Structures are given as structure tokens and as C-alpha cells.
Image 1: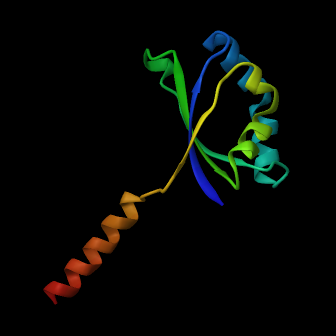
Image 2: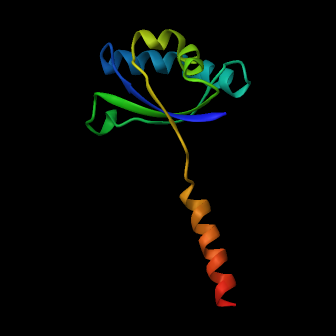
Length: 107
């Protein structure tokens, strides 16, 4: 599976979009977890409550971008999805590896 960052902007008002998401989020989360969707959203970063009302970001796992669009379904009537395939760096894992290497050198 590839990882994608999605930049979502709103086609309707942010309030309408988040209201709709609230209505479908539980069912969508369960469907993604149970493998019933072709893509899986791993994280969402929402700056809306902090004054940035024009976008949101999500981290997705999918074979191809179209799988994300399919998974979003009716939500695509309310949002756009600019999808970027990305490599992920886990800084916590990198830190652990760097500490282990430093300990080997020091020993």
C-alpha cells in the first residue's frame, strides 16, 4: 500500500462539511477498519477549531488515488482532494535507532 497526503478544501461551508462528516464518521471508520473500503484514512489534521477554516489534511493508505475518492463517496460533493503520494518518516523510530547506534559507539 502507498501512503498519500490529502489536502482537502471545501466545496460547501466548513460547517456543513464537518456536520456531514460527524454523521458518517463512525460508520466510515468501522468500514475502513474492517477492510470494506478500498482505502483507509489513518489520520486527519483539522485546523478549523484554530482559526484556519479553508482546508484539512489527511494521511491515507491506498493502492491508487482513485481508491481514496471511492472511499470518500458522498463526501466528495462537499470537499476536494488533492492527493500526493508520500514516503513517511517516523521520527520516534528514527530517534530510537539513533540512540541505539550512539550507545553501540559509546560502549
